[in-house]
Image 1 (tube, helix red, strand yellow):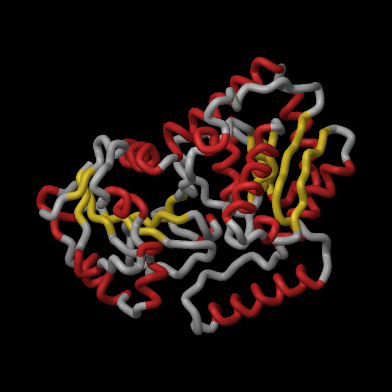
Image 2: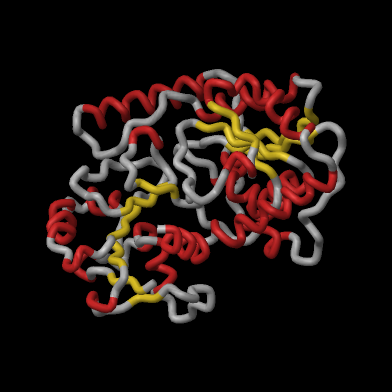
Length: 339
């Protein structure tokens, strides 16, 4: 697959907003790219990349320039773009090219919006290089892990909801270009789910609850320590609670798969990657938002279908899924081969 990008719409100084595949392909050494490359001649390209995020183009007031380029794109080549960050922005309805995004609500988006994984370092290579970190002994009861921010109902929860309500109002009146968000306190939402599991006798809870993101640490040494604690919590669990944070997606979802464990995925209208190719319900415990109060029962029923051998086979299958379809180059190779 050969890609072209318009340099007139590119800004090298805004590195976070560069299309992730493009940013990687521009590096001198690309041993992982395999069948993906860039050309400076659009006639050689199979696909055009809109180089910066829609967030960037909104901020710099050049949406119309982007749409003019798209309208005059030669030879009807497919064009890909992306939305960056925790919160979505409005993409013009006249743009029918692909829009990759982790954020936003699935039901609010048109069919050209596609789920984008959160691309992470390989945690096994980084934190457990000399260990066989995936297979584990399991018991009749499922061990459910979670390490992260979760706070009981209080002032923090009210502030979260009020802040979202104000942002939604500003979006609705056209003052900002951000998407509207679900009115929810995400830290209390997590606490409520975890509390449900802790009260259940059907599962074993393995929780490390924090009142601040990454336990509020600042130094590199402390960040390493909390990261090791985080991944050990995943490694020592069978299942890991994965639900939205500030944005409507879960980085923990991909960290859990990379560690060869099973996400307990609480679906808040999320847009998952490769939905037409991956049967996600075979890889996760799927919990619909309106059934979140049944989370312990759903984990219990899922676990009862497995013995130690089949559960370890699923651990390995989830690790393989992440390796072969959810890392940067494998994801885009899979996507374009699929489409």
